Structures are given as C-alpha cells and as structure tokens.
Length: 172
Image (cartoon, rainbow, N blue to C red; front, side, top):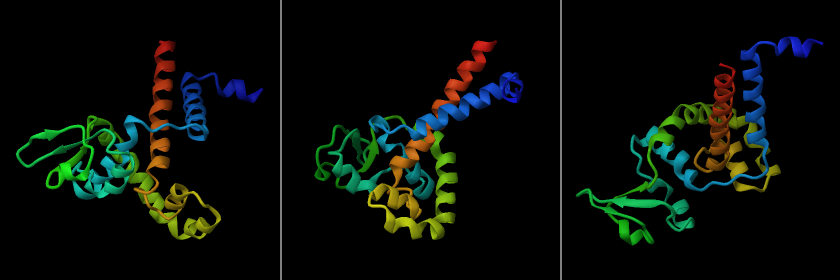
C-alpha cells in the first residue's frame, strides 16, 4: 500500500492532520461568532486605516446591539458597555476584546482580501446565482461584507495548527 508508506513520516502525518482538521472546520455547517465577531473588522481597520477604531462598521455594530463595544474619548475615558451611538459621538469605538487576535489575523486577511479582489472579476459573475448576502460579498471581493467567511477560513488555520502542534508534541 502506498498511503501507509507515505504517512510513515511524522511530518507528513502532521501535514495530513492539519489538512483534515482545516477542511473539517471550514466545511462544518455550524459556525458561531461570539467574542471573535470583531476580529476581521478590527484587522481590516488596522490594514486600511492604521487604527483599530471600528467606526466604519457602525451598521454592523448597531445591528449587534453594540455587542462587546467600548468607546474611548479623546481624554482617554472609557465607556463600556455601549447601548447607543449617542454615547460615542466624538470618541472612537473599539472591540472590548484584546487586539492581539486581530493582529495575528492581519497576514491572513491581507492574503485572502488580495486574492478575493483579484478573482472578483471572475467570481462576480456568479453573484446572481446566490441569495446569501455574505456569500455575495465574498464573491465580489468585499472583505468587510464577508467577514463571517473570512473568520471561518482564518480561525480554521489556527485550529488546525493547534491540533497539529499538539500531535507533534505528543510524538516527542
């Protein structure tokens, strides 16, 4: 048998585990976005505007009833939790969660967004076949509008990487 011979190497088995776990995570029909819901918008804000301020995502913030959002005023006073836009008229709106995860996601967001925009002239023609707004945004190269898909693609890399590292560490 060829397959067992190939998988004799621990590195190749680790690679196979990475691919299998990644695909399982990406293809899983159930996906929840709780505390991580502002990861992609924060990464996009850092990439495009060099700030973690989420003011550009105000419609999504209002739609989620200001979930995990805080306002930081010019004098550095913080308002948390937010319940309306009136509480943050002149301040900056940030996700309450630490910025480390969005920073780790930045390289992945840059690559995915670049690829999305490069292929959007081709995939944009498929938009009429789909009704789901997130999928439509993804096909047209809109990273902000398809943040849920990007979140799944990127978090699956971290999950598969963690499982693979645990496997390789267990071998030691």
